[in-house]
Amino acid sequence: MKTKAIRIYGKDDLRLEEFELPQMQDDEILARVVSDSICMSSYKATKQGADHKRVPNDIHIYPTMIGHEFAGEIVQVGNKWKDRFSPGDKYSIQPALNYKGSLDAPGYSFRWIGGNATYIIIPNEVMEMDCLLPYHGDSYFLASLAEPMSCVIGAMHASYHTRTGSYVHEMGIREGGNMAILAGAGPMGFGAVDYAIHRDRKPGLLVVTDIDQARLDRLEKIHSPREAEKHGVRLIYVNTGNLENPVEYLRSLTGDKGFDDVLVFAPVKQLVEMADQMLAFDGCLNFFAGPADTRFKAELNFYNVHYAFTHITGTSGGNTDDMREALELMSSGRINPAAMITHIGGLDAVIDTTRRLPEIPGGKKLIYTHISLPLTAIEDFERHGKKDPCFRQLHQILKDNDFIWSAEAEKFLLENARKI
Image (cartoon, rainbow, N blue to C red; front, side):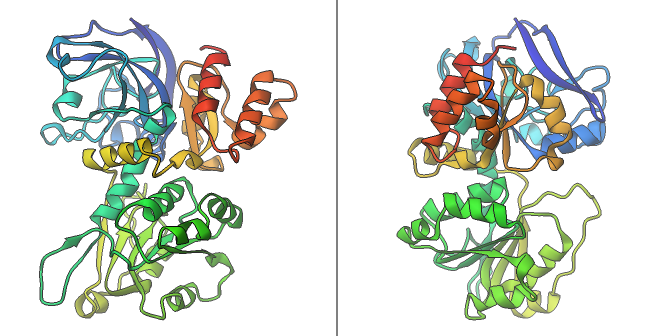
């Protein structure tokens, strides 16, 4: 079967190509990709090429497919997996396979599987590691968002606390405690706030900071303090760019007790040091953001490490259980990370979008791999609709949904957009 895919050949060398997939083996699965959301990790892989830990050294000879936040439909199942999967099943994939200790992952390391493709062959390793996950929702894009949501879920599971006199780590955020998310108005912040409010184990106080008021306003509109209060969470949004002493003000919101959990969502030295100063006794600093600089450093107060039992953790992605939790919460309607999405594009938009990802404002960039469409902001649909009836209808659909991407919008786009 022929596929169209974005493949990486080296640093900043991405190519949209059509080629024949090899014959599927008995321990493999042939699948159609429908949607993929572009991750900053793909940008890093593009910039680093073979220097990236997950990208093979020989991509200049054997290029690999990029994209790892994807979902689609199973087309054909090899004999080994016929008792577990069937043609027509919707799926999502956990890319962090950890197969026999290897860092190899779909979207970085494999020639025949990646999210920015029309058709793929899912290798045996994915099923062996139980990383091909069924999805039962009515859209594909939410399954694409399961991977980024699993990162948020994993971060909150990875935070930990102790009790005086005990060396046992109690995993997870402090239930009913004080929690802060710094630089939290980006796309991952949307998911984090949604999850923190609607999960079972939740904070009593949640403070979300950023220096971009427009992003904070949009986040507050989607996840309002009133809504959070219904779920037992006091939610406060703070623009720290307007504060002379952010740490003093933020600590004052806790009665100067400090925060039990502080998540840092941007790799900024000053933010890490601010988070350290905000910690309560036995507080946990969770460095969520992944820096591109291998020498990234920040100062921590080791007096507090010794006497106030403060500690630090960090995660790089979530695990399979985190992703299952994301899929279950989305399927049941408890969380809806659709607000993370601000741009829509087709397969032919991937190369430019990936290369310029840090420069493009807004949240998640969602790609539908079987259509041809320039990357377009949802807020610009109305303007484009003056000339294009497809955008005009999409604008009307989203207008009735607070301009949040939806299953109805996805269905219309897939049926009416130009095929690639």
